Length: 375
Image (tube, rainbow, N blue to C red; front, side, top):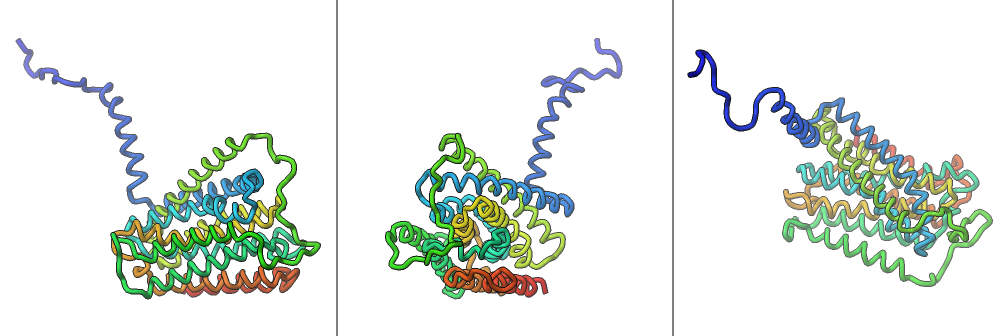
């Protein structure tokens, strides 16, 4: 017989303190999921943005050392290794930023991040030049491969601009220009790698530092261990890119800033950090060709970010979602690349304010473009 007021114990899992303990992991998992996918506050978005940028800087310093060693061990040379593999790793954060923004139905943010990163990364040549005071970096790092990659970059940017003014057609949700960009990049890399003996070469001067592999290994670690570390750093750079993209989306929502400004300046600068820091570290190691190649090669891969964003974006053609600000940024990147090519061809030893004419012009063009976007 049951006592009055007593309720029979329920069947199934026990209730009470033990059940609450068992539910805690589920609550924690829910909190983590909410943190990853939910709406972030302004303070949290700013903090994540800064931490992700710091992680990117630390990874980039180590990448410069690994890239210099692996360029010698693979026999690719600093120019080709820096422009392709090194450029790919340093561009991973930008690729992730563009893909995340495009998937979140923010095409202008995705587009401006890609082309804004190119403009900011081109300015990285000026920053790296400041750490090589004997002579202008463009003079000391003379390389036909770097010039050819600069030509490839202008072609890729030109195709991107043409796509925005072409008919708005898609094939399986992808604009044909995305396929053209990938094919042009692949063909350009093959041409540069197989161009053989050039019909002309840069004149050697006392300040020219040729790309000669080190006779003695720079580290006792095996090549496989170096590749493993290279891949792990790539994963960290990608994670940083995801965090920056998510934080930038919330900053855009909470502050009401211009999408072109956020993508080009805030995301673009973080996008350019790997190339900038790696270029400075490479210059300090004496790997001057690698420093310039990483910037130009990374820029070529950043144009391919548009193809990645176009593939992920489900609202049509990413190229036609670009507004006036985004097209202005693409033109800015094209002008800055042309100035850099001029600097590599002229090879001015010392010029205006110890930066050379190209360094001064690059800084001026970039600052003016940022001012136009801000106002």
